[in-house]
Amino acid sequence: MTGASDGNSRGTDISDSASDLTRMTDAGPEALAAYYDKWAQSYDADLPRMGYDAPKRAAAIMVEHGVPFDAPVLDAGCGTGLTGLELSKAGYRDITGIDLSLESLQAAEAKGVYRHLKKRDMNKTLAFGDNGFAAVQCIGTLTYVREIKQLFSEFCRVVKRGGVVCFTQRTDLYDDAFTKAIQATTKARKWELISHSEPMPYLPNHEDFADKKHIFYDVYRVK
Image 1 (spheres, rainbow, N blue to C red):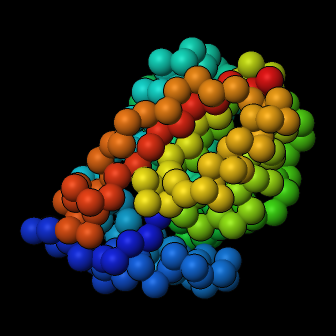
Image 2 (image 1 turned 135 degrees about the vertical axis):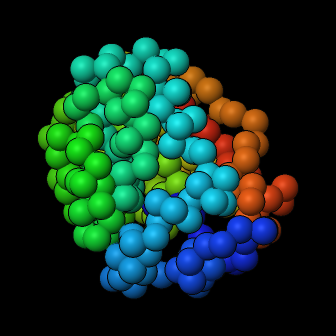
């Protein structure tokens, strides 16, 4: 799942769904699920055309920070499974994916890299037990999450102590409210910062992003 924007490509052929992203920024769960259900058919073709490489970067972060290859990893907002596919290529074998779109989850299942796939709304409590994962990644999804502080707390609950939380957020959405949610989670001693990246390319072949909108990669250690 990728965050919304205005929707014109720069010299690339993308689907109508990809060109209509901006209308979904404030969409509710039902509308969002319906939108990504429709886009699932062309999503895997559209994203590379727009220069999207966040799944590969995120998988490299998991390796860099020592997440064991046989450890359970939660791919939160897995979409059609591009993120899980890169985790699998990196060597990870115990991946659970969650997403709001059933059609996207079916596309993810077809890739054969997930141990479990679940339909979940990340604005609600995650239906997993405590300390069940060694790491969680949430890539290109936080645009749509309204309960950011609650979600961060949930990540820290389901990931065991010493585990890794990695997420991306668009630079234009890394605002005061988002920063306060991070700070509140840190103040509650639920995690500690490992790294905060420089602004990185997001959709460089998309004229509404290109050099105008980038993403940060944040990595935290659960306490």
